[in-house]
Length: 129
Image 1 (spheres, rainbow, N blue to C red):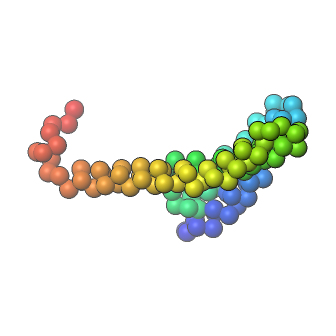
Image 2 (image 1 turned 180 degrees about the horizontal axis):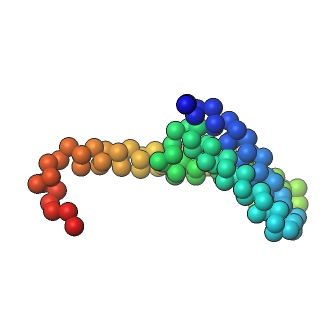
Image 3 (image 1 turned 135 degrees about the vertical axis):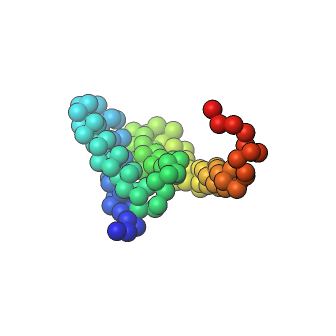
């Protein structure tokens, strides 16, 4: 079974629940509402990992998750006429471009290290503990 179409429902859950969590926290909602919203948010994160085939690379969640949260937080603070709102919203838009490079580089290096360790003879690695 191919799981590639799970990214869209995952992104929808994250895009919906992220701003709702920010709104619930900003408006002093009950704790049960925030915890209830975290369940579909985490489910959306898992679906996004399955749909993008990055289940073994959870750092890519740092690319996808901050955007809806920071943008909605920035607009909420802007609505309250706080000066920090716009920079936070811009940070939410810029975060995927900033985080993707280091996350991708980390996983490429990890894969290269694993490939080197796989091709080395057991005598060169040394005894295992």
